[in-house]
Length: 374
Image (cartoon, rainbow, N blue to C red; front, top):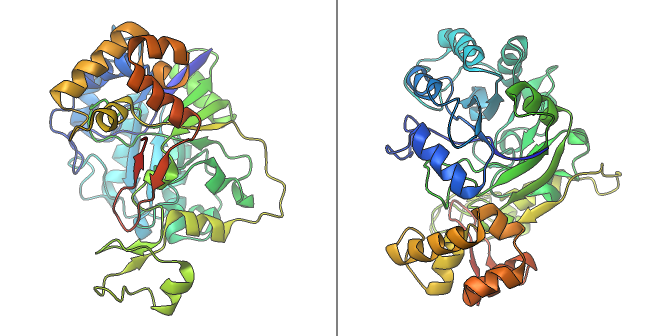
């Protein structure tokens, strides 16, 4: 059985998250997007855990995997996947003595090393891996040169690529050969252009949480899907103040200080990944990575609207969903001719991104990249 999974999101208790986020709003969005398995996000938060308890059995037929992101020492972010919410409670209780905000923040700070956090998680029977591993500020490879420097003797169960990276960024790094790559939305709301903007397709034995986690650990991800990496806000090396892009040579020449405004130049995900890659080693076999653009963002571009959440955009979106099925199926699976019969302009745009026939303007320094389908 193939399941579509988004395993990293956030609740209303996380910083910069929508206060309208609820289990019900997320589950309804999953039904429209075509998500079968959803990470709960923020499962260490006691109130959010309680909010989910009445929604584990749901009419949307979505399996909920308790998940959480924590910030450990070195400001590295770790993604934790658990079998049930009792496991989440146990882990939160252990972290409490080393966290001042475990009961307050959706993404709590835990003053422990990556190795100790992983040890605790593994002792409780859960899984752990670096969240958005290549992100400059809080990613594993933004802080360390190897998994061992962060996690010591503890093994990671997976690695989350993040919005600024795809499989090609990690497959050249020998130490993570054989480690499952995950692509997740890191959504801070239930908005349809955020939830499921990156996802995984996983070959699972059943929709039981234990079977899903085992499939991830055993490398049964059959597809990663997500942003063109250039759309990520840290893709290219750039100034964090004016966002001017620099080559590594120029950044070194300017001592990583922007000559335009004195801002800090931050190494981009692409340059960091390439710097760590060893192209001489034999890469392990990995599932395909398909680049996608959220359907709402495509409609916004085609119609020249200011927001994918505008009323006009929503009318077109709902018409496509009603006639063609879930958003993910429209983006990946519905034949071009069927989309064309429903909306010619949207069909043309989807064909362009499926074929990679679009213009990309890479992000960097904290500013998201953009694309042009004209």
